Amino acid sequence: MGKYVPTIGIECHVQLATKTKLFSRTDNDARQAEPNSKVSEIDFALPGMLPYLNEEAVRLAARAAKALNAKVANVSRFDRKHYFYPDLTKGYQISQMYQPTILAGLVELHGGVKVRINHAHLEEDAGKLTHHDNHSLVDLNRAGTPLIEIVSEPDIHSAADARIFAEELHKLMTFAEVTHGDLYHGNMRFDVNVSISDSDKLGVRTEIKNLNSFRSVEAVVAYEIKRQTEILESGGKVVQETRGWLDDQGVTTSQRSKENAEDYRYMPDPDIPPIVLSKEKIADLQKDFPKMPAQYRQEFKDLKVDSSVLNVILSNQETAEAVSQVLSSSGLEPAKKIANMFAGLSFEGDIKIPETADLVELAKMLSSSEINSNAGDVIFKELLGGTKNARKIATDKNLIQSNDEDEITEIIDQVLRDPAAQQAVDDVKSGNDKAIGFLVGQVMKASKGQANPGIVQKIIRQKIV
Amino acid sequence: MKITREEVRRLAELSNIFLADEEIDYLSGDLEKIVDYISELSELDTVGVEPTYQVTGLENVWQADEVGEHLTREELLALAPAVRDNCVKVPKVL
Image (cartoon, rainbow over all chains, first blue to last red; front, side, top):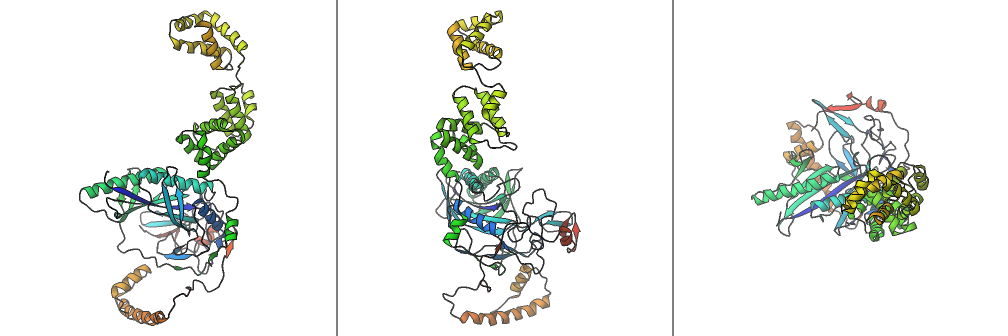
């Protein structure tokens, strides 16, 4: 790449976690729903229908603003964005062109990069089309679903940072409980703008829309930087256009551009009176605000865990809070143990975040060598499956290990008396230290897994070396 | 203000309507007159005047986030000119 500096801006559509749509009291959960089963006369845009703004969408927008370090506008309004396409029954989308609810903000990435937010606006989603031989079919379940569109300034300069920014937005929006954040169901979709330049002036940009994974955001940016560099180095010019991402082939392709520039003829929507929020009202909408990722990062600094461990804990607010609770109630060591256990686990399936007391108990049993690390994993999984009481699980499953040296010595003597052990004893004596593993194994077996292997090894060494 | 045939065609396209050639001829004349008439308004000094976004004077008109009663899928789809697989069927787009 060398001399070209890439510049990236990202727009992100976030589906708000409301029960109903932005302007109608229709069920907003379209997952696995039959086509057009979540549609009312307002979403269907029958003549004469009057849309009513969803109060909860305003509350969530105010909370999204706080997560983005942005001010909430005292006055915001809705506008009509006109275009004809069958996924949009009214002939216009209700959006906020001129006076968005969420003003300029700032997202600081954990690598230190600061990405300014231009604004974020409320708008309704469109329906879904499927295309067939000679017709298209319209499903309006998603039509009217409340979104906020977060628009960043072009402050990102690498594919890796583009991904980190997308992940951070996901954390901010889920920790603030603005969205369910389910990427599989399109709860967050990213549009990226990429250009490269070897001067102070920005280069010609391309836009790639509708990416629904962090991985594809990173891959698209990397691909576009490479593609644009190759064009410029061979003396060509980058064309300003919208490109599509073919995920299976890992390439972007030119999408047929419209003959005419888009002209949405924005106008104020006379159906929706303005949102007017006093300082007091905004404070009320933002009250009881949960901790954000940056605060957890600050708290967890002294844990000194690997950054990959930190990423796993922070990928989910409940996990971060669980570790935070262990930290505040029992200190660094237990918190670090629990953090590492969360990170060692693959997050498939439905897990229940255990109670703090159980996590603390688990960490204590590990610290005092009452249980070994394998037993710790077994107990942890039981807790995540919803079983309560870490100590009871340990007892029920016979996982408490013996640290009683006299008891262990007795078992060791038994094992060593067995002629089958003689070869290993000789091997250890002649310097083959690995053979001690066999002896430890025999003792563990004889103790039904309850002897502390550390102590077993120590005593065997004392006896035969 | 001169309105060209091209501008009328573009307007028709944005409005998703079809115009015959003779309609384009007389519409460009009509639109010129309309724009000239309306442009008298721009002679007014509106510095510092807040645009009229709304005429009702209402603000913060919203509803609680609870599912309410509405027409059913069957009632709504019955209004569509063509239906297939519980979807509205439209001429192929894309």
